[in-house]
Image 1 (cartoon, helix red, strand yellow):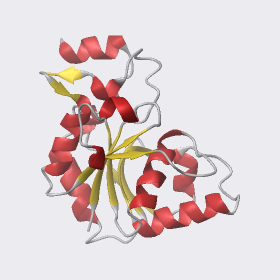
Image 2 (cartoon, helix red, strand yellow; image 1 turned 135 degrees about the vertical axis):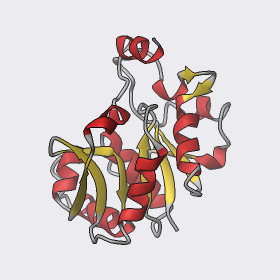
Image 3 (spheres, one colour; image 1 turned 90 degrees about the vertical axis):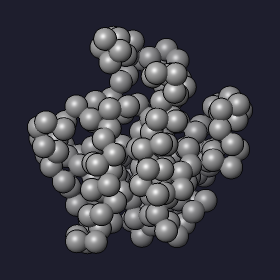
Image 4 (tube, helix red, strand yellow; image 1 turned 60 degrees about the horizontal axis):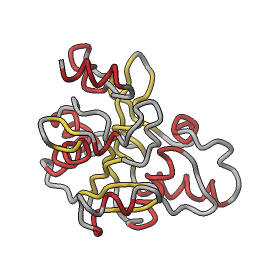
Length: 196
């Protein structure tokens, strides 16, 4: 069975506060992302870093939180994705970053459906041929392969782009009229534009 994963573990340094706990219309961004994944009839967990775990338990059930746990440590979003994989090694993961509040449920549904017609280890969208790895479907097989590369010292960089280069990837071009769904809100200025 597939699992929905909200990535919340970033440092939010440009925003100055934890983006996943920002609110839009009174709802935390992490809850917005979780709701979109749950709308696809998926169980949902949130990937958090060590510093966030206690704070998030005041908003979410402890059973919904998966703390970064890859050893030796991995950096960036890959740490969160692999940590969820370690907890649920048999499940494919439909991943959505918390800072994409404009993401459309229909785009997520298309990712969920694509593996019935295409064969790959990762399914994600691309804009101008550049992958959008923070909204993607990662198969358990592909994640196991990345984890094995890490354990054997062959995962030379921890960037998502580098990890994707190690796997068969199916990329779906994003239609121009839907590209705003992939906007990352990273700064206060971005946030002001979103709310205006």
